Length: 305
Image (cartoon, rainbow, N blue to C red):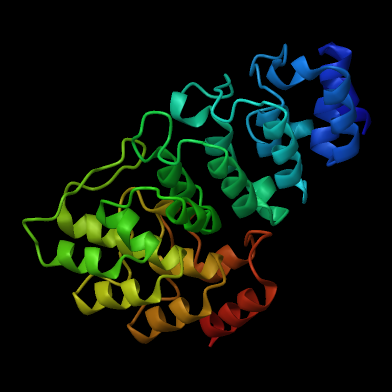
């Protein structure tokens, strides 16, 4: 805890104590600080990120010492929001405006995911009025969740009404008929790209991107449809998750059914991603702390067979 206190030394005492309570999951201490000074909920850090207290629940964009898995971060967020925190207040953690709200920071952060609280956090924020499609209404929240590999956040965003009107978003959301219409070239289909997502202009490449993200999100029916329609099983399209194949993304999430389907359709288990030059099995060695261990073991067995 000494590192936490050292980082917070420059802050006003009440703000420092409240921030410490947030990053250590101490709900009662946080309630006590807010009761003593209600203005804290709108106060900002003196650090260059200028975070409000709510931003700290994301464990992203603030000092590394303050970024840690907090299993009750959703409860912490609820306390702050009930006390009057501005759900979509921006901070200066990153240059891009789309990545400055608490929601955008959560869906791109590993720490809440490791704590198993990402989905609940997204739900709490959206229930309190967070812009589900991002501050510019451009689909940035869903795009960010996909690009950072957090399908649990994708699921909640879709449930909360995030738009899914391009082939990658629709595939990740499991919108089978939308994807089918796209593949059929339906002229009545209204497509909207997302500013934060590098959606390929070439329809073949866009379908390959859709395969990668549908696989990451466990959408087995969409994956089967795309493969049935001739999408290359080993495609590694630009803009895909860490420039990897569908097999990599499915394996990393411990999606046994998707991995088995891809292998049955001829996926090459020796294929390497374009960024790290690693196989899907090697990705498992660094698999996310939030993936189901049993699923990862089952996937490892399939890839090793």
